[in-house]
Amino acid sequence: MCAPQSHWVTSSGKVPVYMGTSAVSLTYVGSITVKQRGRPQPGGRTAVARGIVDREVREEGVGDAAATGSWLTCAVGLGRSWCMTRALSTPPVITPGLLGGSPQPVLPASGGLLLRPWEDADAPAFLSAYQDDEIRRWHTRRPSCEGQAREWFDAYRQDWKREKGGHWAITRDGEEVLGRLALRGLDFDDGTAGVAYWTLPAARGAGVASHGLQALTAWALDEIGFHRLELDHSTRNHASCRVAAKSGYPLEGTKRSAAVHDDGRHDMHLHARIRGDRDTPPTPPAGPRSNRPPKPIHDAWSS
Image (cartoon, rainbow, N blue to C red; front, top):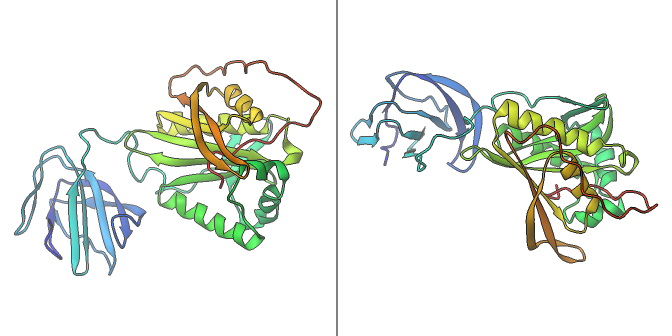
């Protein structure tokens, strides 16, 4: 629709800016002030400006590009440009750029816990988690060495910048790694995301997963503005079910034969927390108890 190297016209105001080589490989890089007329300065890459258009948008020699009140995405690069209107009739629940435009936060949690981004020095502890037999029971994607663990950390940092997800180490006072929490599958349009977690063997049975999950949930729902958070786990993972219930994620149903584990396909329980749900978590359902050590917590996405 857009002519190569074209000018574009929109209303004034700050809008998020993404940069990349295509519409599917964009990274948030900040915001710019858009004036009545202007040309993005891509510096050899594709520059993308996305924001509310409150009047007709016209491109030189192209004509109408979007109607009043629609969402517009425009990219102008060397020799190539494109623009499209946002297909949905509703504005996004969360404004693009809200996460990627700021550093990933450190989140305090009850019990002296601190959720912080993964650091390269955490690679040994991270790798040891995937060498634990019980954690391996629920995970089919596993790092094979410390170098690969650090590659995962690099990918986690890119996930944050690209607003694809957030990954935290659950630590004691920011030092000793006790477990992992992740926010994945971010959907800014509908305001939904998924959560995942595991704990190291030495940290099980002390409320580490539930304290961390409650802190991440409060931040995602109350501060960022997500409306719904989901988690799922194998129906055979009773410990994860107790953590979900204790953290205010009621069971919504069972997804039959939904995930593949080393021992075959598993049915998966689906839990969810909605913004506005009562703050006091419901009491977990009573279940059979044994003298065996508690089972590990299942991570819904395996990585």
